[in-house]
Length: 407
Image (cartoon, rainbow, N blue to C red; front, side, top):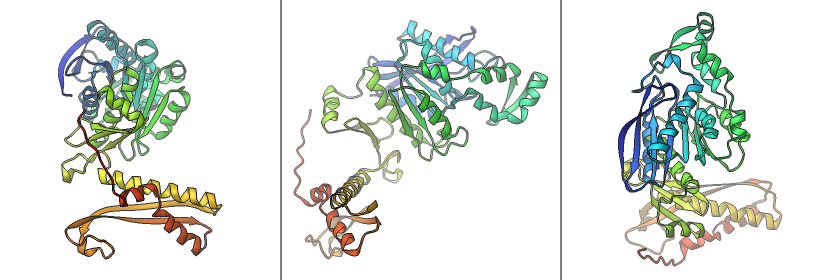
């Protein structure tokens, strides 16, 4: 599904006109979403653009806007605070409700994540909320200019440098974020919650995600962003968030990014469809689980997920480890841990002494199995033999029939 994007404006909470971009899918949107950008950022950050694209590809229209005094919006940043940002979000929801349809999904990045949590109880139609590297306490932003806080409190204001730009911060801003707490908002959220956070985020630590997740009630989900940075500056990280968010959101918004038959099949098996980011990125739905697949950049992909052969190797590795665990438990052997390392390659058939094929190239998976535990040599050798009996291993060596048809 392709999309179109158009510029719109609407009055913010204090009356200034706020600049926004509305990303629309082709056809009638299944739902609308609001996106709140990070502190002192804008609607046009790469992360917000990629995530909005992914949602639009899934049929979800996205309104992303500049908060008062930022980007192309009117107003003075020094007169804003966390509470005014929350009010701007509610104003954006009012605009969507009147001009299009009220937002069913709220998405916020960094301090924008805290803002959507605070705004959610005031937007009745919102059924799902997602935060990305968000602080659990709005006052967390004070560390960005901690050396100036005392000056601001004494003089009433001061200019601080944030991300290479100068901003005037006033005493009322500090007082507002210090007094704004998310505890009540999380307790009254009553929406599905998705928490994205990078464990290595140096701007907002992973402890914040734990606090948000713990305080919220179910349904709630958490996705680790591995080695992503706070702003999701790498394209593949933003693409991954967008793809997973789109797949998760459709569960609560009533829309389906693929035909009904695909969704039905997902409950029984595996459904794979294009993610809409790059040429080769794929969304993989296995029952209630969502995975991402792609090829490395050297093969024309964005490297936003494991390759098909890496997924195949993962299936063999998981099956191997599970099989050894079940066998050891049945025998009551002291097996402590199993680690399986796998590598897929294509080699010349003539270089494989044990292979029947003698011409051309063949697939080879090197599998290294590490077994930890107080096991004797006989037990270890037996476990190595059992590894070759795991169901996926047998499937790879058996005759396999793949039937294909168009639906």
